[in-house]
Length: 227
Image 1 (tube, rainbow, N blue to C red):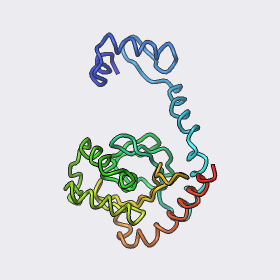
Image 2: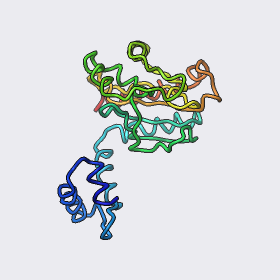
Image 3: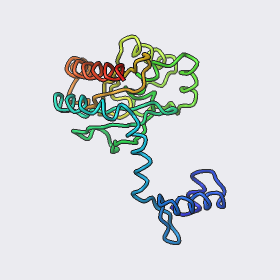
Image 4: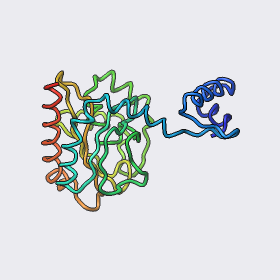
């Protein structure tokens, strides 16, 4: 990006953006060819520092591998960050969305199964705050955009212990998610299985995928409780 593009995207002045960029160049996180600023591979150190300090990194991966191997479907773990879910672990067996999902990808929490599971753990004032700051709009004809209906759906996810979202974010996508709970009983993350909606009905997805997903989450929860 050019200096002007960085300043525009961040809302900083050109002088402020330039000082920060030159600091990042000096630290080795950014390269500069005289016109464009680009990230260097060293930037990966920052992301890995978070992952290596997260207990889920080591605890969840073996169980995710079992889920992906058993179901032959993509398995992911995400955390709530602001109004989004951020992917921190992902094992992809099929491409199920038009965008490529990877560690670090963000999706709107209110429109995803993992997001609804995590939103269900919030207090009502906290949930209202997140929804008020979310860009709630129809991605597909099936997207729930009515605030009351959305809150009811999120509450149902909390009661059931899982959330299933079908064709709301993309026409061909459906997923089911369960919470990952720490020893204090707090939902710190969510794990899901995602697949093409044409391959399974909603009922079939819950029957086939929810048991192994729940089983894996229970093992992860137990491991977290022992830490």
